[in-house]
Length: 111
Length: 114
Image (cartoon, rainbow over all chains, first blue to last red; front, side, top):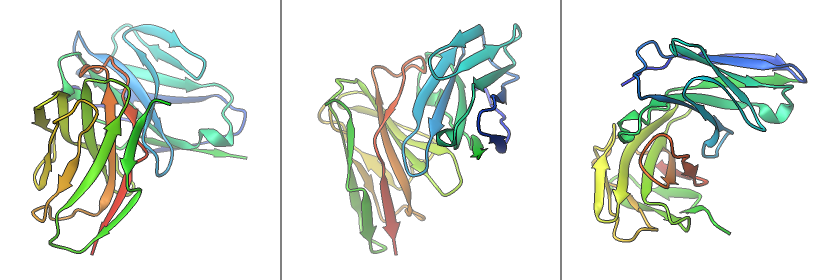
């Protein structure tokens, strides 16, 4: 089971790009990296998923270096509404043993 | 309008009582999950189900029970054996069990036991 480590919290000003890094040193060959976003008193929401290199969607980008021992979620030009907890998950397609959300990174966007 | 519904949003019970939390989905998903979240903490997996009439324990199953008699329903019972039942409970579903499938979460039920 690949353990993940994320910063507990981050602050950013509105309009800035935010990069949240997740460390997963013992990631396995078949593991994927997934990020979720959670607002207070709501369930998490899927943001992005990747296996290697770079993935981009309308919300964020995910950068994964060649060794895959870490990944970086990039949020372009954050707004106040991006204030949330961001979770990095690592696991393979084998089953729910890999659904470990951890404590996540609490991002606070400042006006 | 597809999605996951959990009811009620807030639930209050006396210590020693069993309580059942409802979770329904109309997304035609095979897999369903129950998580518990304590203040300032991440989500912890209680139970999950890959198909009807089958379910597996997660990391913190003690004091909880589930059933999966229908594809769209996955109720969670918090029994009196659960030592600290007060928490925010989240139900989720996905097309399959693999991490590559996006999980869709319900709005949650906040349970308070006094």
